Image (cartoon, rainbow, N blue to C red; front, side):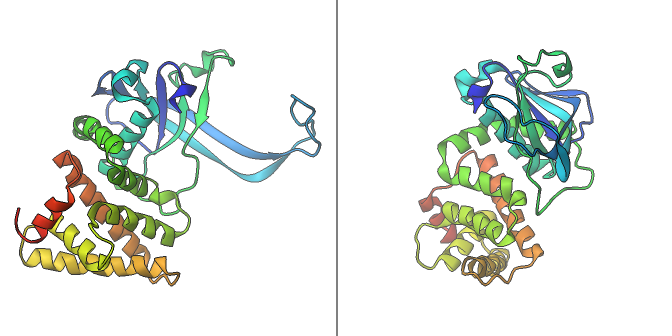
Length: 293
């Protein structure tokens, strides 16, 4: 996707409030306030378009469409590709961390090749705008007062390189990022639940047999010290896994709270993996389970 932008990339963010005007995320990446309004009304034409031309009028407007207020942008310089690869991938890592650790309501509806506050003056032929996350959030999440302040920026800036490396090097971690990052956008909640548990299974299933017990026990062992709290956590996770199994077999019994609990569980796992700086190996997980570590 970065080939669409040969120079710098500007990722437009919606649903975000910055306490200060701008923040330095490291490596020349800036998070700063801006404003733009992305909108797409639905229109209908009634005659075929001649080759290479627009559909002739008259046009009629249809109900619906979508719009987003872009209130901040991430400026990613072109030079980082020599070390970190795709600028778009780096933007997605930063978006993932902002959603994971600050406010899950943040979205990225549009990329641009110039700062948004200069685009109005850029010639049409030179400006590139690429709509990105424009779908509806079917399980919308958010936090009260989830503003981006210096502490939130420090949390993101200290972790984005590690998170990006994990996403690039570990298919299991990358799957977990995709599952939690886009879970809000899946219309069918049963599919969301299955995808979240698919990510947890990829991280914690050393074998395909006895998945319910092994996965729940390994997750509990990863998150809790040995003792009664770990045992209770295993039982709670196993009950959530039952909701996944019912959904996977076409007889869903889960409620929205079960989906939220599963999202929260995967979020907790990702927090710990990121702070560890690595995905735990299967032997390491087995050692945690049996008290060898």
